[in-house]
Image (cartoon, rainbow, N blue to C red; front, top):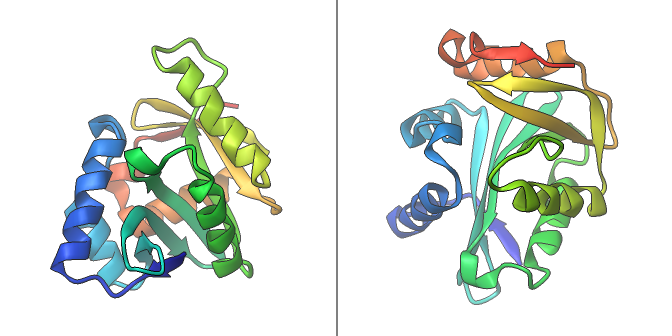
Length: 178
């Protein structure tokens, strides 16, 4: 497996299609904003592919100072639960080994329509080395847990990444839960 950063129109279309399918609209940033952040050198949009260049999934990261937010990560639906996600996640932690690497997930400890999915998602990340940080956030009306890969992260660090990369339009909708 490999992570591809050189994205032609075909790769970009596959990434955007999976992005729209895998993430609820309330959790998606505009794809144009992600492209702009990438073009400014503060994000990577990665195509996950096998040795035959078959599309397997996507990873989108946002980078500020020594921090990397795994903003979006998805494996194509027909390939899920086959161990691909764990292998790709290992590639990502290696790629950003010299950075504070973290992500957001919907809180798994609240009652929700997709509570089992939330719990499975959290179990996946914990199994792959992520750890809870001591705070959660309300991000644009969605309660999120923050998980980090062997590093410390404060709410102020988290907020600074959002404020500096995505501006006031998004960062004004972030608040500390605990």
